[in-house]
Length: 66
Image 1: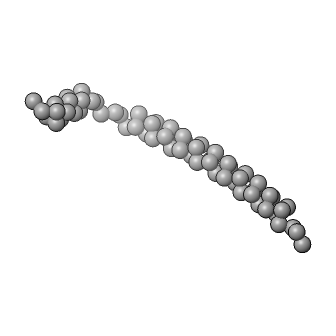
Image 2: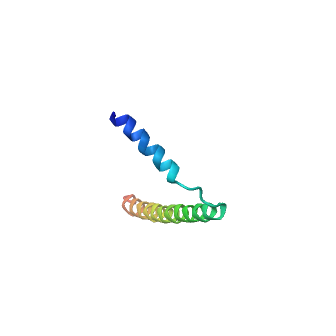
Image 3: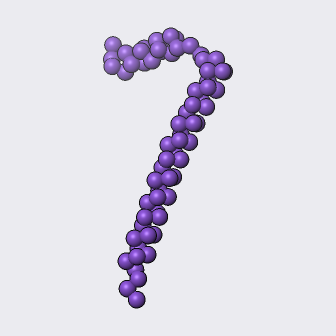
């Protein structure tokens, strides 16, 4: 039995053992994932915003040679 045939057999066995989740469980997991993505995106946005303000502040001070 080749490696590919063995892997295909393992995949088929795993799919047979897997059970379909209920719609409620799926929606709960979907909400949790969306909340996590939103939280990470919000944190990234705040960090980017702060870095932009720092960059503007530094270039504004050093750019006044006049």
